[in-house]
Length: 118
Image (tube, rainbow, N blue to C red):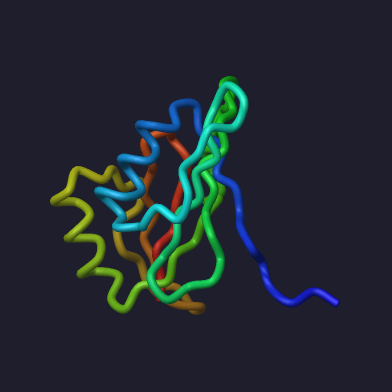
């Protein structure tokens, strides 16, 4: 039966711009970056996590403006929010407490929403 998720894809128009955002601003590490036809196969990893994040080239991608496509767990939402803001990350929602936990929502370089939470 199913054991784990190997990777999730994030659709991006510009793989180089997205790679810069996810590595320099969010701190993900490159697991693989190799040619794949007219684009690249880019897998990123979070230290200590098994699931990879693939920056999948999709030229006509239109981001969902309401639903985050990726959710990252952080130790402290406010601290992470402040650190990411200093790096120029655009937030659509500052830290907010909800019955299920504290969270904030930002945009990646391609307009995809990302939720950080506890």
